[in-house]
Length: 237
Image 1 (cartoon, rainbow, N blue to C red):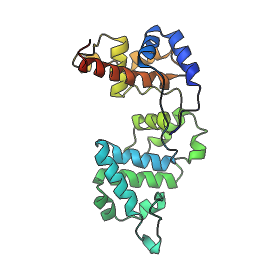
Image 2 (tube, rainbow, N blue to C red; image 1 turned 60 degrees about the vertical axis):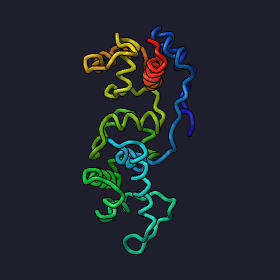
Image 3 (tube, rainbow, N blue to C red; image 1 turned 135 degrees about the vertical axis):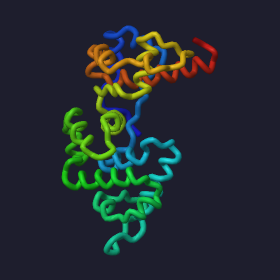
Image 4 (cartoon, rainbow, N blue to C red; image 1 turned 90 degrees about the vertical axis):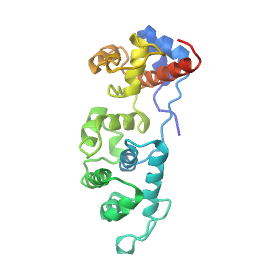
């Protein structure tokens, strides 16, 4: 785990100067502590993302571990992966359906990770070295061509794997709720309905003052949700 390479102290200063309400949230929430997860290749990171979709963390982690462990056994042609190694796209494409099923993958997820492997081999999914030189929009355009990978998944990859500073995930529930708590009329004790959450256009309009630090601002939207939860438990408003 490591901090992003961008200057988050400068980001906090500029965000607070440009948006007083956001500045007050930053003051309440405290230091920016976003950490990047282990530098996996795009193939490895997206494989994990697909496995984790729509599952609780522990269940997803167990399936992911079983999948990786299954490649420690002899593979096609007698090849063997070291237990600590991550399967390659070639290994995944060669794996029988039964192997993926026994790991706990649904039919749709098995199709998605096979498509990920195929698009890694044909170059649609770039290498880590190449993707680091690509702009955010191009990365989103490329990776959403993979079955089961949507814009939100790529945005999380940009923020938490690549450490990109200017990502605004307008479809993320936590970011939308934090936005409503910070800039709207939503209170910590309110039940959240669809009408309480901002539309993408509203968020993008306010975010014009946040560039090039939308990732930092988005991280504080999640912190706004944390503060509201603590306030609710503590009986505050």
